[in-house]
Length: 283
Image (tube, rainbow, N blue to C red; front, side, top):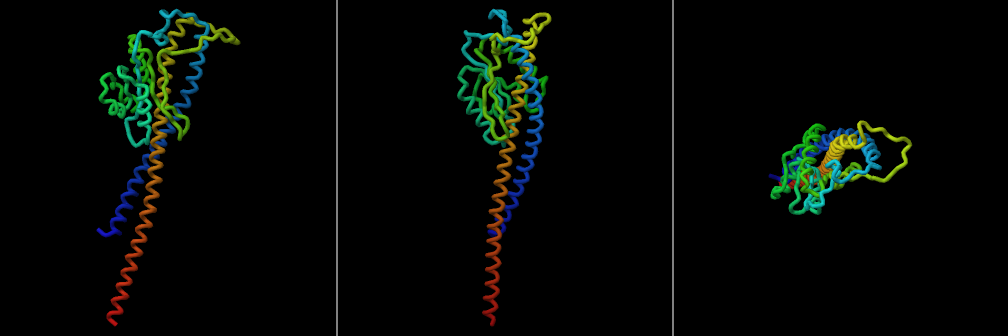
């Protein structure tokens, strides 16, 4: 195959790849906007819910034995319960790499891993103490599924085997900046400092029962919010990666086109020289 044909073939190949990366960029942008709307709505709700719980919790004098399980510490435990959230799809830049690198600084032998996302299952396939039952939880995220998952991990924490339960997720700041972070799920910590309130809330049937009933709702909503935030980060990372790939494809096509035109011009010049030389020989 001549140089011209090889270059033209490469141009077609790169242009074909560019169409794919551009399409994936558009899909990621649509998903990003969709998850961002959900995240914005849930942040407002969570803020109000947390304010209610904090107000209720302040001034209460619980004994350790009578605390709701989500607030209890288990000092005799010697391992952690880690929920690691990765993606199930690739082509999202350094998203998964950053999560695993961050997790490795926290994870110790003996800790239990709850893995969400098939990339996490692949990364920690050699680990024995892991749970992959909810590996596809984020594929089609639903509040009811997250609610069941929250109940499951709370039940696991109730065994008293763990010092804490920590969610390892990706925090979203803007479309360019997102970083792995930890969020402690259990035990929940709220400030007990006294605060002068403009009014004194009334709780029915009691302040303690109200708190015991609202805490599970807070856990479910908080977990759902953090998972949505992780999805926003994933789609932002994928969109950026595909945008960069598209730009690289455009740059490569321009470079190859220039190379093709130079080769074509050289080929035409050589043909003209041959024609002129042939004409002279005949004369």
